[in-house]
Length: 344
Ligand code: KG4
Ligand code: ZN
Image 1 (cartoon, rainbow, N blue to C red):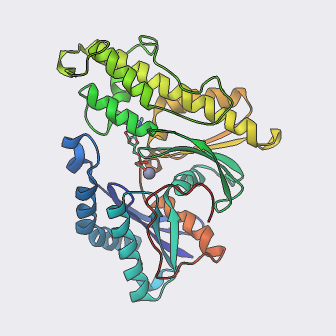
Image 2: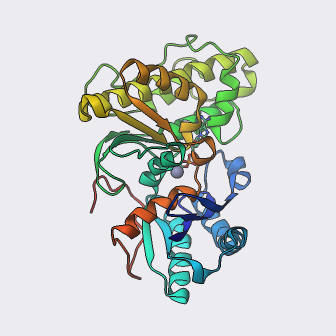
């Protein structure tokens, strides 16, 4: 089986051709980071317009690189949830048009579960059943997966996503967008203990995250208590490094503790597996600290490969499992911008 997967949930226009042995025949990602950089975050209208311009050239390039035509495909898959409405619409409209033109089945992809499925490309053995941590710019959630299509929401952030906090704190520190990589880089020269930033829910059993209080704590550490105006240019290089390292450490501590708790609460002793995907999964400190803790608690740990952490269409290979299970959509398939916690 050969599938074309399309991904336009946020600010990357991506397509990939993958087969049912998870061989990647081609993968193209057209990043819009340059367009959103000056705004320190993704502007939805700009993202949607850029997808319109890029979607057909990206699909053409993907098919050409894979050396396949539309006729060779067994299905066309598209991420229709969750994401930015305008961005999702472009991908879904393109996928439907291609399906109508080629009489191929249409498969819906949930972007979050695709981020976890990306771990399958980094593992020689089946990753399910597992607990999946999806940690990205828009989401920070834990799920228990029986398979790629049977899952249960365990808990997640009650406010900001971890990646969003990285992006906002980078902007406060005068570091470039996207904030994750630039904070990680600045943090290398900093002391993670320099600031005692809050770590929400750490001592509780419940599986929840909160990063907005942490963001505010960083702001006050920069401005001084009670003041609001930020002047990052007045911070010394060492001050930026210490703030970046302490912030990063606080986020990582929360992600590590809650992920380990989620596995221990839901997996049997001999089936403890954690899979981590999404843009923040590229974070080196998170990868190292989670590896240590998982070993301590006898949890098998799989991270998505670095190139599959941030948005891409290779992870849309989850569609092959849906195709095998007969989960084909009709042309009424709609976008669902918000989070669907449990299967519908
Ligand atoms: O998965 P993704 O490409 O898009 C969403 O689905 O949201 O994730 C993008 C997010 C951004 O917030 C970015 O700052 C963050 O992932 N990110 C990182 C790192 N690389 C990207 N966060 C922390 N450390 C990194 N190395
Ligand atoms: Zn994503």
